[in-house]
Length: 157
Image (cartoon, rainbow, N blue to C red; front, side, top):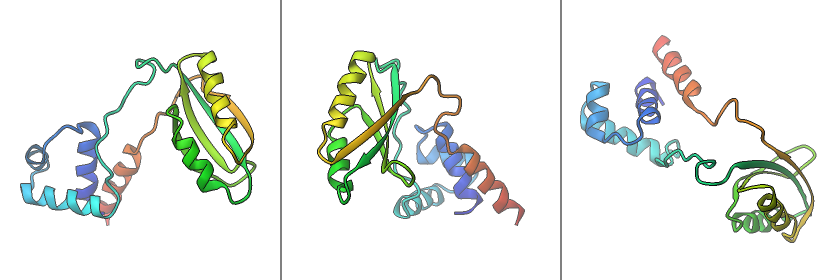
């Protein structure tokens, strides 16, 4: 990845609906250059798509909770697949430390959260969970600082 790749990704981070021609115009490069770089970034697994940023609270899912889950040995795949089937489970990360999996889930209200937690703990292979509610999100998911650093570091070399 070079500075132009980083600038392209910053542009798409800020305005994901831009087409290739408009990206080329804003970056001052040929349309084919932008398309080739997008193709390469996709092939390398750096760029995975352009999903919209959704406000889950506005969609009716006002609670976000995180669960640390301890599972039976050798059950990571089957437990992960079962968690994937629970619609309110947004992310699952295999971790080190006290728990084996770190799960982000959403719910409409406290009663709904209890239903989701009950679904999680009923998954075969789940031994123990510890759940915490998110009160706010002072730093939302982001990649901009990494892209800005990369664009700057590449330019200064």
